[in-house]
Amino acid sequence: MTQLTSSWNKRAKLFFQTLSDLAFPPVCVACQKPDFLICKNCYKDILWLQESFCPYCFQESSNSSCCDGSLMGMFTAVAYVGPIPKAIHHLKYEGHFAVAKPLAEIMVEGWQPSWPEPDSIIPIPLHQSRQKKRSYNQSELLAKEIAEHWGREILLDGLFRIIETSPQVGLNANERLSNVNNAFWANEKIKNKSILLIDDVFTTGATMHAAANALMLGGAKEVYGFTLAKANLT
Ligand SMILES: [Zn+2]
Ligand SMILES: [Zn+2]
Image (cartoon, rainbow, N blue to C red; front, side, top):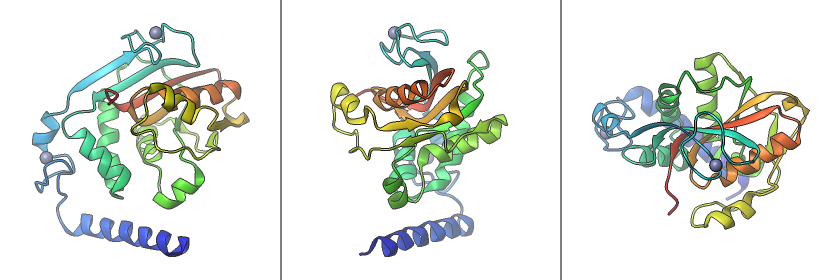
């Protein structure tokens, strides 16, 4: 299949997904019951963390990292359990981009008023070729919804993924770090800005660390990270 056909097929799939979302009541992504995309029952199974932690030693912290590193602090809304893994899978791999809205609402709900107020929001970018294949970036969809909720600036051209890395799944913490190290590059748009990086899941933090390193190298004032969920490394 040519890349063009594959990309058209993907777009067609997304188009019909949107049509069927309009024509039929949404089905819960976790239990398949017709209700909301995350039904009321599954919503009750969400394990709220609303946690501020150090992205280097993983200790709970109050708004800032206890260890030295580019990330000033790390925040997460929920644990990677209950309906969350299935919902993220739908968003990332099933072309079900409508799931971004309820997931972003969970992030907004989980955000604590005492946490910092950065100038700009930046989603963890995908490499251009992967974004073309997938036709959207799940972190960007989450970040757009959050930026809209908060009325905050979203910067989609401040940070780039310049190296196409292999997926992190199945790698240990050290392998993850060397896989994404130097994968990002930031331009001058981020200079002197306080930035909140958005991603779906925090596992070892390797991607967040590498992205934050690139932003600090590019002259950002400070960088924080915020993910929907925090997972245990398996
Ligand atoms: Zn459900
Ligand atoms: Zn620490």
